[in-house]
Length: 426
Image (cartoon, rainbow, N blue to C red; front, side, top):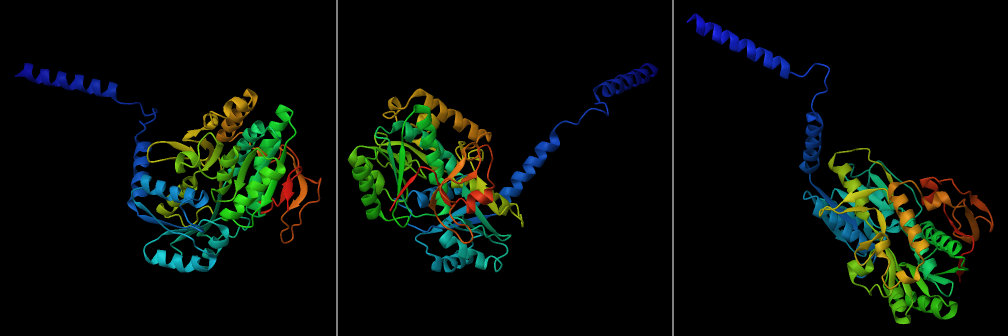
């Protein structure tokens, strides 16, 4: 019996020593369980609620690049978030914005978006009436916000700069044409981004290049867009054509005339099957879903004070439902991205130093360490859009020196002049 007691006591001592050896000292950090628990709780919180994202499209969706890209964005959000439904209305004018919005809210919409400023701004008038609903609108130049009225735009000029490098390398006549909608801060800013890329290619290759812009008067006028595209080619010897309008007419003309086309808003070859890489040298693709995801996540989290000005660029990204990571904007063509997006037919005509520069600048912008609007001087062309209390700067005026980044507010609402050297046709 004594031997048994001593044996038990000995075992207890051994177990106590082992326990002491295995115990973590008080100074050691605890295992990273808390972080994983927090992440799990956040995910559960995100999927716990349900939301309906309603987009009011100013135009038809089918056959357009702008509304087409917004529609794709809504679908991608719904694919990634099973607790988010996407609904929409097409061809919404400013008089119909509020009635449609209230109808959508009655049907359960929690987030209502106007995908153009002229028809999205009326949403601010009902924001106070529906404090639990997020309203949002694209920015053209007005920056009006409320605590639940969000304004947004992507930094498309970054991808347009890359397109400009490619277009500048491709032109043989030295003439590049833009079929454009009408003068606005949004349009002027994007055209200037493209123009800076063209001019950098011209400098690198010692070329003399002229960029011609002719306005149609609206976003979607297929017949007028076709006529202007023809004029640019026949009268101004343009051999690279792009657009700041929404129909496929300029592309049709480029294909008919056998010249290069540079696309906007979407990978028109890869997503729409429009034309081919025999005509489309490159496009830029806008992933509005990166912006919409930010808005949706804030609403699902119950944030009553979301960020109300969203100006996202290539260094902002989203992971799609299939695991693909996409920046807000990028160059794209036939489902390829980056320098691989350059048309195989166009690639032999583009010197290696331009391809290397495209790759370098794209990588830098994705990392957020370079921007064309920081790097370049802004010298006024003397043309543009006169705004209230903001005249067009006189030709030759240095509005911004190189190596200085304008504020988001200035870029979004006050960049009202064309850069020196652009030719704006009557």
